[in-house]
Length: 338
Ligand code: SF4
Image (cartoon, rainbow, N blue to C red):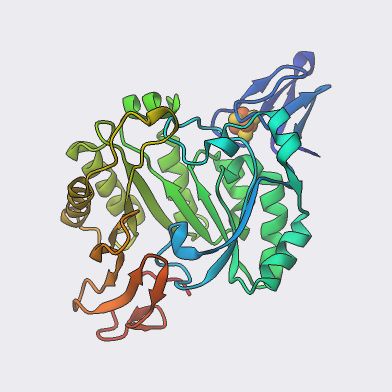
């Protein structure tokens, strides 16, 4: 537990948290929406500081990041809680966890030890993932500073709901930003996650790219009947093209029935391929289908000369056609960070 960053004191021992876009006003003894920040006697505490739910060495492609240190291994850490409560969450056991569960199942790992483990495991960097990292700001910030001192890369896998001031705090130390744009209508975000003002996700993502020069990749999990209409998919693709650039990778991934959405079918492959085509038609150079092992759209193919740059089979990656971060055959810029 640690005193939180980015909060203000209000009359009556209340506090307001400014870490994410909920900007919760929290009464004494109460928790924020994320269930991991508590007002204790007029002081806001991050209960999740150094509390670990999950830890693994993953291929960076699993995040998914396809144009960011391809083929490298990333030390991946998750904690507890979330500021969204998505009905289809794959990791709901940790992201919907409440305090009693947290206390009985959690392990403690200092930021220093996390970085030591990252190096000992031979990883290129560290990712805060599995649950939402922006509600873990204090710990991820300490870890990111140490990681940069050690020459490691740093990654957030995020719903993008951090505030601009939260982003500006971690921005100087964060290299990769794998962000969900889950849909593109008020109704969808409200129905899926009870989030009304979701457009802040777009603004902060643009800021991550423009102000902090982060490498951004966008993920959309296509859920049958929820966000699989051409209009939403087209809107996402056009926003990526116009605000992040045509070289920004877009991952359209397959939904699997989960949690409170177990009644829906998995995304048909044809719907993913339609998403792929929509992205390409909008002018995006790199669109990938996800959660369909062996699909040919997992590969990176040069948009200029058509040659294969990176071959992928599940999480096996072969950088066959790269010269630094460009196409080995024609020199085209592939927006690859290495
Ligand atoms: S991180 Fe977000 S959800 Fe959690 S207390 Fe702060 S404003 Fe509320």
